[in-house]
Amino acid sequence: MKKLCAVFVFLFVFILNSYASNLSVVVVAPFGGSLSSFSEELYNGLSLSLPSFVNLVKIDSNSDFLSELKKINPVAIVGPFSKSNVDKLLGKYCNKPVLVILPLAKDDDNCSNVAYYGYNPTLASKQLAEYVCNIDSGSIGVLYSFDKVDTVDKDAFVDTLLKCGKSVFVSSGIPSLYEVMDSFLRELFGIVKVKKISGLTKGKVFEHSLNVDTLVVFAPQKMFVHLVSLLDYYDVHPLRILSVNLQSKKSLFDLSIAVRKSLRFITPYYMCQSNSLAEKFLNDYRETFFKDPTFISAVGYDIGKLLKDYYFNNKSITDAKDINLLIGHLLFFDDTAKAVIEYRMVGYRELNRCRQEILDR
Image 1: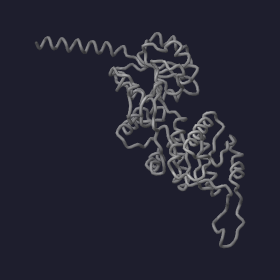
Image 2: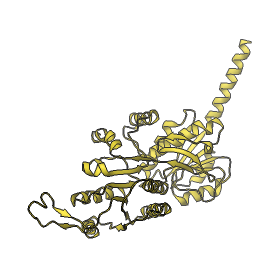
Image 3: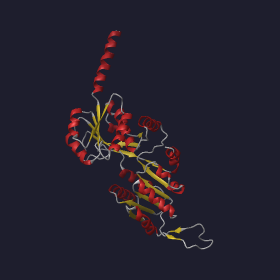
Image 4: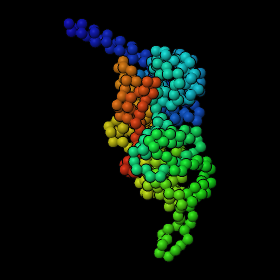
């Protein structure tokens, strides 16, 4: 009987190992060129969360990636990044028996084997508008860069705001040249230098005619920091400054305490979370790659965790719901297999948790 049991155990392990050795997950991403570091970060996050029996393979999307995929015959494909390459991939793999997970560009064809999991800045902008709808926002000002992503996010914010009966008091695009941003803000806010009147203007240098209680900025982090620093210099201090897509980087801690206390933003990844999953990810990433993870690393880690917990347990990852992952709270996958995520909002208190750790690195 013991011999028979031993034989069954041997056969089970042999079959499992044979099956596992053929389990390949392929990352199709631009591993060459200007986005190579971005691709590596996604790959690194995936490698930390996938089970050890999975063979994780890189394929450069700048190459003939369809031919390379055919040689490997993977069980799952993560990527590509660009819409044109997604269309190219799905021309061959739509509704085929291989799971495709898209972290950036989305699938317009709604293929049955394709799921989208990633940070969606437009969804984050709508979430930000819902936050404004539920507070005493006062007058609302919106500033946005002319980058296509930022204008789309701004429009999504304004449209969602209108649905709850609120409107924007002032809205303006931000000039791309930093040299003219100073004059742009002075003109927009009516900023003038104070003529000193003894006892009345003591300590004041500037005054302004446009008052905004809630200022919402859609711009890259570098532009955002420069803009709000200028407003701080000119003594323009809204009650709250809101944004999306910012990350906990040193540039935020270069802002004055007054600005940081008014700042709240929805982030694609908050580095200083205190839950066990986030702490393990951060520690493992630093110990393995000797640097801090980024939001795309966190996306990769989340995708690997979904594969491990669902797909490799013979369950559909689109059944995943009500789970706290690194880039936010996954509520559910909708009917088109796109993840609906509640992203984290970070403010002064959360930033202070990060401050010393980030400044020391």
